[in-house]
Length: 340
Ligand code: SAM
Ligand code: SF4
Ligand code: SF4
Picture 1 (cartoon, rainbow, N blue to C red):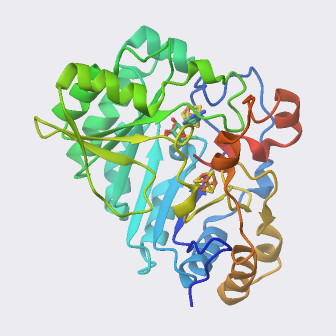
Picture 2: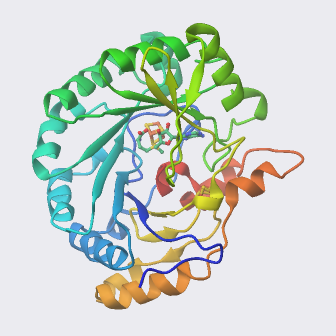
C-alpha cells in the first residue's frame, strides 16, 4: 500500500539529481566563485539508481524527473534513461535541463524512452544570458530547443525564473518565444532556496505582479481549473496561449506536495528546504534490494511533516536560507546538488 505522510500526502513524485556539476553559473542558483563538489566515488551507479527507483515505484512513485546540476553532463545519460524507461510503473519520465547540450542529446534521449523535457531559459538577450549565467550560451539553448522538437518531444516546457531588475521586462517576449515554438512557458518566482545567496524579497517579482504585467499586455487572463499536485498554476490568454506560474515564494503549495528529492550521492530529502536527508547510499551499497529499501522509504515518509516554503513565508524577516560558508561545509543544501 502507498504510504501517506503526517499531512495525508502521498509519495508519487521523485526528482532524481544525476550530477551536482553544472556548465552554467546562474546568479539565482550558483552565484559563488567556488563550490565543494560531491566526491566521484560516492555518486550512485546506474544500477544503484535503477534499484532505488524500483523501491520508490513500489511505494507509488509514478512520476520521475531527472535533474541536477545539469543532468546532460552525466556521462551516458541515455543509457540510464533506457534503464529507467523499462520500469513500467513510471507513467511520466521527464528531465529538466539548461539545454546547452541538448542539440546532441535530444534524439538519443528520445530514443532511450524519455517522455518529456523542460528547458530552463530566462532571457532571450545574448548579453543578458551571459551576465545571468556567466557563459555565452543562448544560441546553444535555442538550438537545443529546436533539436528537442525535431526529435519528437511534444509539449515542451520552458521554465523562466523572473528576477526583478534583471529579466522582468521579458515576460511578453518569453511568452511569444514559447508560443512560436508551441511550448508552454512557466514563470518561476525567485526562491530563497539553498544556493540563492543573493536572494532578497525586493528581487522577487511576485505571482500577482507577473499577472498584472501580462494582463496589461494581453488583456483578461483566465485561471484554468485543475486538480493536480503540479506546482504550476496554469492560465489562459484570450488568444488561446496557456502559461504557468510557480509561486513557491509567495503562494506555496506544500499542502499538496507529493515530491521528494534524491541527490546524485544517494541522500533523500523530503522537502526542498529540509536541512537533513536520509542516506540511501549506505543500504544500497550494503546490497539492500528494492523490498528492503522500500521499507526504509516507507518508514521515513510516514513521519514526514515538511512544509518548508510555508514556514519561510511565515517568517517576519526573510533572508537567504544559508550563508556561503554553511553551503561549502554542507553542499547538500545547494539547489544544484539536491535538484530543482
Ligand atoms: N540545470 C538544470 C536547469 O537549470 O534546468 C536542472 C537543475 S536546476 C537546479 C532546476 C530548476 O531550478 C531550474 O529551472 C532553475 O531555474 C530552478 N532554480 C534554481 N535556483 C532557483 C531559485 N533560486 N529560484 C527559483 N528557481 C530556481
Ligand atoms: Fe543554472 Fe540549472 Fe546550473 Fe543551477 S543547476 S546554475 S539553475 S543551469
Ligand atoms: Fe514540498 Fe517542501 Fe516545496 Fe513545500 S517547500 S512544496 S513541502 S518540497
